[in-house]
Length: 407
Figure 1 (tube, one colour):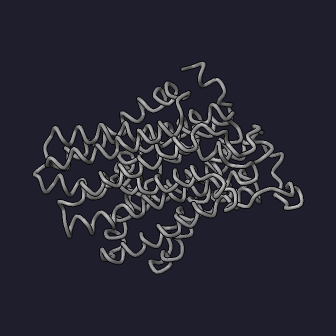
Figure 2 (cartoon, rainbow, N blue to C red; figure 1 turned 180 degrees about the horizontal axis):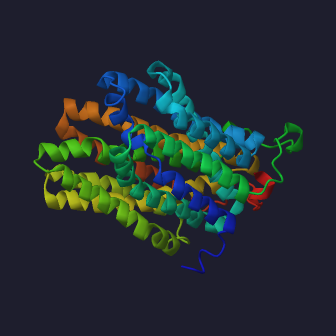
Figure 3 (spheres, rainbow, N blue to C red; figure 1 turned 135 degrees about the horizontal axis):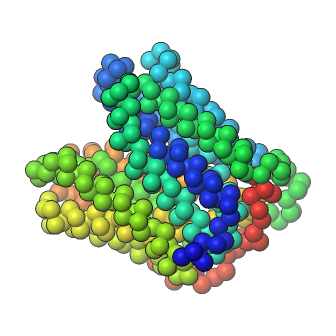
């Protein structure tokens, strides 16, 4: 494993370490609703409106952040996004409730726009054959931080107040902005000019149309993240309806987080030479089979089997799909390709709860079969793309360049 990670440059390790800090204090996504309905005294519908508008800001940031990175520099975009989001979150407890309708989506937009540039920095810094390991490393540190975060946030809220959670979250992002400024090279941070591009450089849509397998992966990720995230919305309701305690659900989520932290890097390294679309398709199939286990009913055994399959499927499809999109992106579109990926992924996250909740309320017996069918369809689409396009060389210019030249 050590040999397989040797191509990951020091800057990427440091970037991932900074993401651990950000993830460890990212309390907003866990405690926002509690804060709004508690200390702020809002109704559930009012809190849902603010959270929903914030979700729109997050989606918009993910879809557009790559454009800023490609035109203004990815290093500069990461720093700017973290400053905007960090300053806004730190001030959030002080602003009037009505102002949250503006401030919170701005904060979420700033957070979202950094994701594509983080991915582009890894794509430019890590050679094509090692990009899966690079993205898996970033996910490892982020998942480790998310594991530490919620209990740390509970301690802060208990001993101080919920307001301090947002101050800590904002401070973590401001720290990352300073950290990125220190560890990422400052040279080469130039605006992309149209006259510097070759005359035949494709536009985003032309490049995507010329890479049909990338479009298939993007669509599959949207579907997969929508069904995968049911474990955080409808699954706890399903378990409660079958007599399981909150503690049992918490244990399942802990199993998921622990296995991802333990297995993702070793599994990614072990499969690094396997065809990426085969790995991605296999992961999607395991996610589908995980929900198929729940069709048999709410039992301890089916719940454990479900979570094990979901976890392995997550490990197999997340990092390889990010790397696949990066490997097939022309250099001048790397940020926008990463934006398409992160936008598809975050759209699935945002859609998961409302779509799953409505379906579970209307026809609870249909949810898991539909999740299974959608997951299988996504897997078949990706595996079919492998048969049609998997052996073709990437159309992108894949000559590696340093992050310094593209930051």
